[in-house]
Image 1 (cartoon, rainbow, N blue to C red):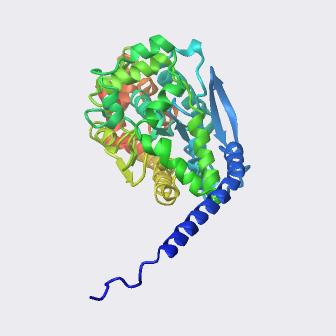
Image 2: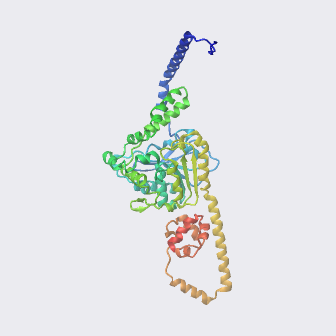
Image 3: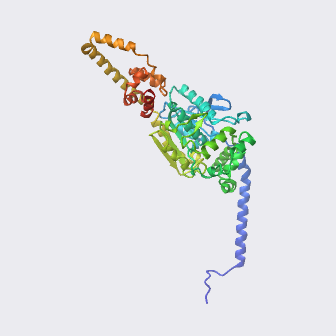
Length: 477
């Protein structure tokens, strides 16, 4: 019977093939090993956070950076008056948003013509362990917002909060809506009702008491947090990524990118103990922000007061802050202008993946631009003011010539004199100097004048959102 084997078995050939394969493997390993020292040097010396900036405000450890597009060689086709303040998390350094030129969120915003500021929290000292979320939101963020408002001449600015910074930004927007023009929330933890993934399970009150950590350490050590994050995907964080690194030692771009990420991961930031305790207890364990029960220093953080445009940017494969820990927040805020971008990447990929910079950030830049066109709004408001003034002048002329007798005029004067003085319109919470000036120009100078007006007319005159104007009227009713 003929053999089905195509060629007869040759033990000598088999041995030679095995020997050749072993030799090739050894040769490849030798070549890889010879490249390892240079690759490690690259990893240790790689540059990060290179977009030029200047420190324009300091408080405690905090530094407020203002980026300088001219020095970066960036010349946008158009610019936008309303600046963007980036609020990063208290964990890790913020240069993940400016990791390298082609993967820099900061540069994408600058290239789109936005004026960009960023809060660098830096590392808290032992004396900072009692800093609370109220300190971060109502003191640090508030002071930085006021600096940016003053430098830009804008009553309200744009905010972009990333991760824990997004959570704190939402609290700030709820407490100070008159100072926020548009709110961007990037991978922000906002709803924890079985939606927060592994971190929510690990942080459950059933298994974890943050008090024990802060009582032991004061501030929560970066190493403590880093190990926890790494154990969420131990195979990739402790094995696979180093295998990929070894396999790509001859790829300079890969080695540099690897080095930048490893440097960022290794430069963790301790977290102020009291703020960490509040964050775990009030948000992860009790879900107070989503249920609109959150308080900072006894003041209610009413999420229904978040009435400005809101943008949610989420990673479909984010295992730190799953999209389901962000999206439900859209249903409880007071804004009727809510946009969601959910992209196929992870928590860090939102800021550093090449596809995110091609697909996500142009859309984000456009979203902010569409909501920062103050020149057009001012022109419309000025035209409305002029039209109202012309109508008032015409009505006054008609009244003087046709309708009002001298006796009636005296009666009106006497009635006016008897009426108590009404407070100025800028005493209404949320009516800042710019809105007050526009109202004055339209003849609405007092609270009584405002109460006698129509909300729709006031919205047209000021250019303010209708929801904000309705809040003014609720205060004067």
